[in-house]
Image 1: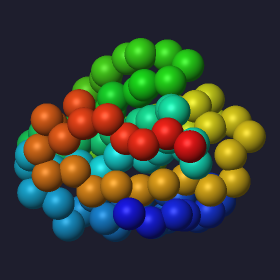
Image 2: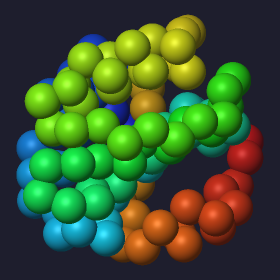
Image 3: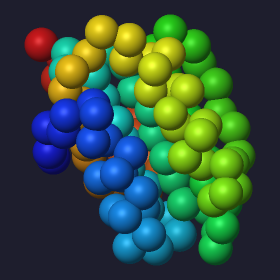
Length: 102
């Protein structure tokens, strides 16, 4: 788990996603852990983006559109946040585990 500044979040997240193998992913959580965005690697160039917070949605995004899509989601889900928590996820079932809320 890492606490990352929101201004450098995209630059930190994209290299981490490059190193993952297909069932793995990364979950972005607000400081209070009540809103989240999960990015799961599906195949060679596709990602499942799961949004839980103000909206409940799932979308499949290719690698070319991932940066732009994440930028808009981060702005929507974390409007007043300055720090975001990063968790690495090994399986999609790890997303169902409850996180401790502050």
